[in-house]
Length: 335
Image (cartoon, rainbow, N blue to C red; front, side):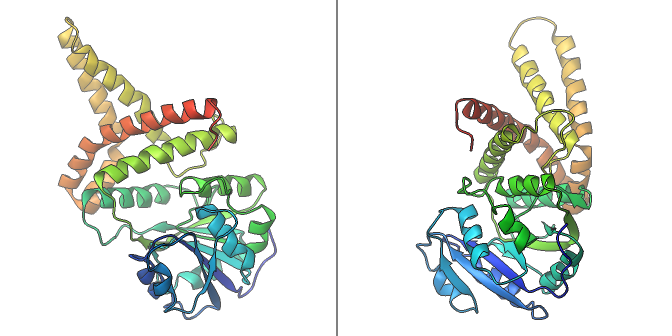
């Protein structure tokens, strides 16, 4: 663990790329934090809209990301010129509470990094946005207080530690699992990352059905490549993601259900196939019961039933992402 800080100065780093729809809300909420000494560095990662015009209305330092293009390079660029003892990374579509920076300042005095979570409440009411946001809240609330991942939607790290370990991996140009990767490095170096479940932020991201599936696919592909690079595959290895371990049983179960479905096109043993289908379906509901119960409690039974129908499609996409990720990694595409 690094040295203890008292009343640390905070540097908030926000990468932006065509973020005009959300950056105003992001900064307006941030500047309600008037009880902490902080600076804001907005890093332009190639904006072609009026994002910077909106940013100019606030007391921010704006810099261009000219070295390593992409979200990781942009965050690093801000960190390298920051004056604070503590780096707070938020995305341009994040709305923090008015006491978020004070809470971070207090918590990080006795640890090395602090991570928050997404609130259950967002302003988009469509199924895909609600489902994704609730999933992030649910999974992070299941984690222990000491974790081995960074969540870049809202994460604070002591600047000396961040610079010593090279910051975010610049090979990640788009948001994917670059924050997981940094968390693994910090964990392996012996640093402490605290999950503050009361440090909650709103995510101003509206998902469509297709973008939700695309997110499952790209994240799964990124995770399997990361696990290979870090040699994290194995029953004895600690899970460096927010995904509950029991959730992984859905993968072989979904494959079994798909195979069974195809078997109905073959003649014979119909009664046995129906019995197996009932058993596997019951097992599927059992494995996902806690998640479905959480959805029912927070959004009602209709939302939970809709989610139950959606889950098999989600796992099919995840399986596809795993397969493509494996193939790409084995053929030399490591990121």
